[in-house]
Image: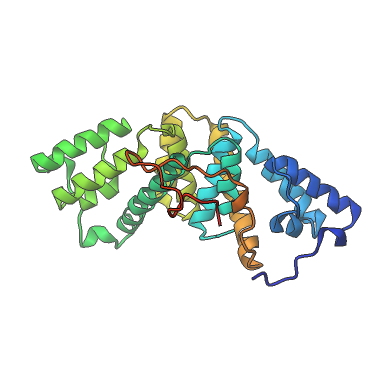
Length: 84
Length: 200
């Protein structure tokens, strides 16, 4: 169970809610409620913004495809024993 | 972890076979790294289990060593294999499993090297980071590609710790497509059998 209360999307300012739309296009999935991580990263856009841009830069297709990089991210999460 | 497995499936890596292969690479990479890193320290495993000398290895060990050198196209046998070579039968089976995990199958060998590199960096394995980084370069990955994998490894070592600190529950596993194919060589699940229904 989360150690903080995850805010409903309606509790975020308009500018932060725009980030939730970006997460839909990033994952190619129409989330009825933004994923918990999206809501966490939108809490402080001065952290979440550049962190998210760095992530998208790292995940952009290059020598490895986006899908291959998602697999790399999955094994990193596994090694970190992170169920999320 | 479920978020990225789901995202990867949505990005086209939908078959479970790909993820089984990736998991095998993760497992055997970690297995080799723990022995190599323990063996490479002073005093380390080598003080109680000296690596087998390639020049004086018994014939059954020498033949496995030759396969290892050929597979990795390098003049020496990596340390973890030399440490366990004191038991030729164990070495032979460990190598068979490692070779099968790392050879190209559904996943290309360069991606497997990248996964092993990410595993090694994440687990702070100096042996694995160097070995699999060199393997990536040997298999044609450029410096930019190496940095791409390092960047993904670094950023998702951040996301995972944010998720863990806040104890976030997985909430994206359900978005991935389900692969209902049977195990290799097996039959499709009967209706109503475990695995035949929708994802819980």
